[in-house]
Length: 237
Image 1 (tube, rainbow, N blue to C red):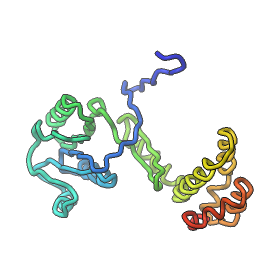
Image 2 (cartoon, one colour; image 1 turned 135 degrees about the horizontal axis):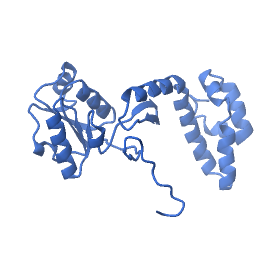
Image 3 (spheres, helix red, strand yellow; image 1 turned 90 degrees about the vertical axis):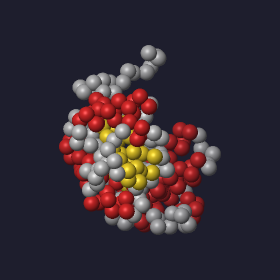
Image 4 (cartoon, rainbow, N blue to C red; image 1 turned 45 degrees about the vertical axis):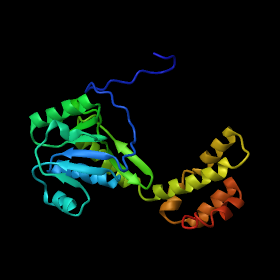
């Protein structure tokens, strides 16, 4: 073990999972199954602009409509091992345990990442419960031990982190460009970010107190910053 590097904690489930965000735009993701679980997987994949192929002899009404509209590719057939060819991600979402296990074995043999519904130990990755506010993503994972707990915490995050956090992220992104263009030291830049993030900044954004926010930014960053935001930052300030 390298000095100063702590070993990854092994959870009660025995799983060690590395948190990561994947860019799946245009990537082929194959979902085996045509029921409710498959429908949820398909919707999340489409939301992230994946190319989705569903393999199943039957589909829910909603999935059938997506296939008819050309949003997904549907292969009306039962699963076979060569169906996984070319997949970036594989999702096993059938109600047949033997088929689920066969998908898991073949995907692992192919070196593909596979998610198997209701079988955490067979998964090489799991999809967390998420809350999204623009480019801000909050994720909750329980290593498959309790989706209900993940859903409960996700709802708490949904309630606490409103659209004002998306606005804050957009604002801080512009502030970061402004600060990086300056001549301050790294420590001074860190202090600027810290000072911008006043304890009441979320309240100001949530309640539309733009004058108070402008005044605060002038105090921290100087009056010239406001002028730089007249274009892209106008909606915020």
